Length: 476
Ligand code: NDP
Image (cartoon, rainbow, N blue to C red; front, side, top):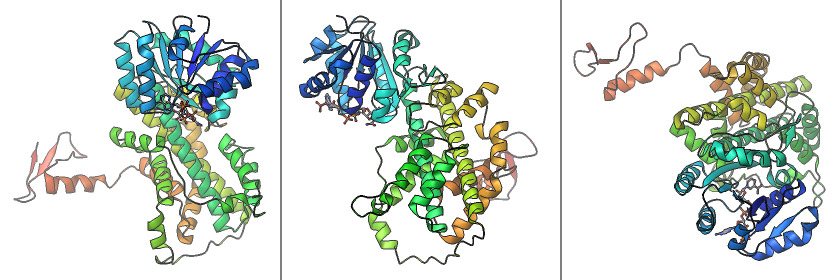
């Protein structure tokens, strides 16, 4: 046994992660259900480092130094359970199984408990960055026991992306914390992408700019506060010409967004925890709306528009307004995502350090961005910050853009350009900063029809009014 780490599941992600370990000097045992993938990996990339190819799970396990460290990188769901069932009888106490696939965190909680009962460590590990990240350095979010991180951390930190010499990998928290944080990362990614798409649509439909011109705007935005991987690739995509038609590539792509489920899981969990992640939810629903083919077909040309065309005297000023609205909405989406992490951490007892999460998202992953540094700094100033949006830096940054944000949302509404994420983020902003919300009326209604009681603004206690009788108030 001489391999320091093993990878089973050698499709795009596992293959590249195994190569990443090998290129960083680790001896890697590699295994795949169908042997062909293992053989082609060793044949094509064997020269990049030391691989130990295993044709069976037993040979794979036998090739590993103890405590064994086995990365499982298979299709999330039933395949993960199948691999674990095959693996576990071959392992010994103290060995570590790392699920690096996109598991749903409750599955991770279940698997971790089952393996802990057998003396094994199970690490649900979020990995972001797609296939390129897996090869060149992803952002890595490992959960499970702290003890397992002592052994695993140094290896993972070596293959992770680095920013300013700091690895984009840290211990997240016990049980399913790693996969939970990866899930919220993906939810934020949905919001980020939707906001970018709305900004594009405003310039396209609102100003009539071409895709290439908008690409130049995004390239320009990428030199400031918005600098990020997603803005960068947006500029690149918008500049791309379709070889078949010679026109803008985006113009020939069908407008139906698909999803694999992490956005939906994020929203479902937010509903369970009661956290208003409106930006992520709107982004998830916007994808669903785009894919609602029969409903869209029934509505096009049938539903009245009654719009007021965008009146823009100064195009540059409008573009700048859109940039500011995008930045403010993005801050809201991140603030909401970090709220969800805080709520889950408290609910499940995970002790997640939010500043550290922003730090490990600065590189390697899809939402890597300049402004994540600012988030880390905000949590360094105040670890228990109740609202990221209210941190002095972000409150000030948004204050500078709030006028622009209102102008853009108003103009979009009048022009009939749908901006669900821009609009709902602004509504959240106005809601969370309101001294008084109309929830007073809702509580009164609830008491009226269901005797659900209410609190008063002027004295402590819980009250009920006898609505169907003489309307006297009693303290419940
Ligand atoms: P896939 O999700 O396409 O999964 C294919 C791999 O799973 C193959 O190695 C396949 O083996 C194996 N597999 C499927 N069913 C079984 C089973 N019943 N028993 C054993 N092995 C099985 O591969 P990806 O590389 O795209 O993704 C791997 C994981 O990484 C997934 O969980 C994915 O969600 C996650 N991920 C993917 C990202 C991406 O950009 N693609 C980004 C981040 C995470 P065989 O060759 O024998 O069919």
